[in-house]
Length: 444
Ligand code: ADP
Ligand code: MG
Image 1: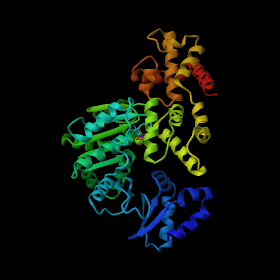
Image 2: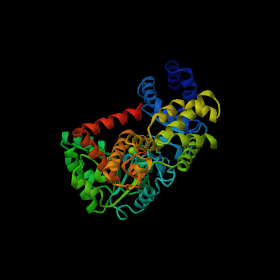
Image 3: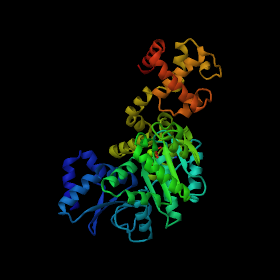
Image 4: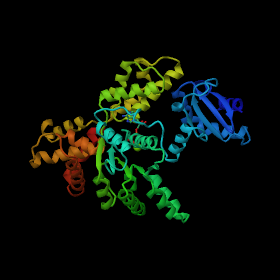
């Protein structure tokens, strides 16, 4: 069967793709399952991400349905047990580790997102510490724990890490991780099938409920109502609730007040974009996880240039490694500059807060330092608000980050500024014109 799959894929893929990702795989059939062995973690992840669906279809077709599952492992055919840490499998569990894996799967937890694989830095220190506390003392430390921050900064990773540690320390704990959109979808399904009581019971009987990206509850009233009751039930019975969002609880638009206020009852922590050292440490940690050599100068180069978030940092590294695999060359500065040139060009187009402050100050004939000063006269405060609104619109920075960049102001000040400018742009033609001019200058 495997040989037939390989032959078929050889026709479907470019020879570089085929040689890099499919050829190194080894396979064995095991009770209705095709076990694939990859030489390293990177090939495993990549193949799984890009070819799992196609592979499964082919296997099913060529085996007349006798093979219904795939599993991926690092190692070779002869390495008997290839270490459970590296094992990603959907197969039925057979031993204690297998049981944990099954419980993890039913909790929707990703085994890779642990505290071990989470690199600590100033930007995430508090969120990490709070999450560890919660993981070790679910329901008793802080409830709920609310983690907020921009995309790709590690919120989901931390939530999974909490879930994983709760499960690992207490085999009887019931843990559920769910993206808020999944919660909504599950609820709608339950309503359709007249199973809403079951739905309620399921979520109100867990020991730890982890709901990701709660901003997606916005505008979904019935879901908010349902979640409100779930929250209360868990809170009153002292079961752990962990929530995440891209912003501070009170700022989540389209969320009922009673939810917003409850979200702030426990501990609210933010995750910030990583500083250079943390970025470099994360790159090294991912590289060693994938079993590849990452030279120090390349790590610093990537860390310095990819500033936005960790997901992009990871994406850059993935590109480097793929490029090295393709070309058969080791990772070097030369390879990095070549492999990342599109990414870096896109990055260079992005506007920085400093640039916005400079351009706005020039436009209004002020000093750049006025942008961050405490002066409150209208002639300075208004342009400053314009700059904050532009920063919100043109950069990926969060409100707290923007506030900090404007002389350590509070995130509510930034929020107020963006709202004020939005209103003024509707009512005051000169502000509207200024804003448009500035937008044009900054983005052209
Ligand atoms: P968010 O949920 O905030 O958008 P994720 O948790 O999905 O971000 O993180 C994006 C990627 O970055 C994930 O692959 C995650 O493992 C990785 N990541 C984030 N923070 C760290 C960290 N401190 N150490 C290691 N990897 C991290
Ligand atoms: Mg996330």
